[in-house]
Length: 223
Image (cartoon, rainbow, N blue to C red; front, side, top):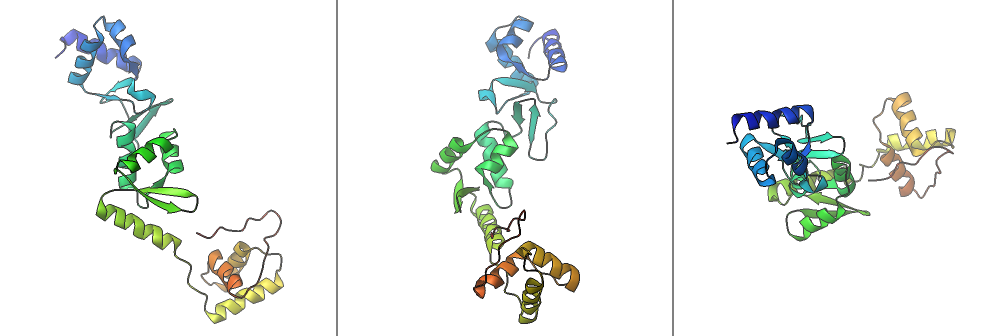
């Protein structure tokens, strides 16, 4: 253990500034870098998953979010440890896996190359969806559950019953400028019928009908 006064000096420095790099810390307490590392190990610390792990904070300082991540400005700390370990943790606990963009948003950094490396080394699974890859857990049970939820999400909407289809087509005749989204909203509002935009779009496709969204309205993408 470091001498009591040295330990208190270290703690007081982190109370003034929550994150330190090792060399400035060594200079402040006038010990070698190797000694400072030993002191930190005895007290308990986190090293950053950003900046190549060059920033340190004491165990009791970070206030982690539900993902186990804490940021001080651009410096990120994780309960899981390094960036690769943090990525694996995030994917393992996700319900439907995560894309590189979703992981990057959580970690505030681009992670494409690390994700590819983890996949190639067998530490992550990968599922192609459109132009994106969804990264999944390598745990068989977790991966299977993630795949089931993805498949459910992407499953085509059930066809509309004939009587509801008639309502949709009649509404489309009355409001030829309505988008699929607006048609579904009108049916839900006026007819009190549960209906999704994707079901309206599928109805038009099944009958070979075309409908362009009005100017300024976006056509919902089919998942």
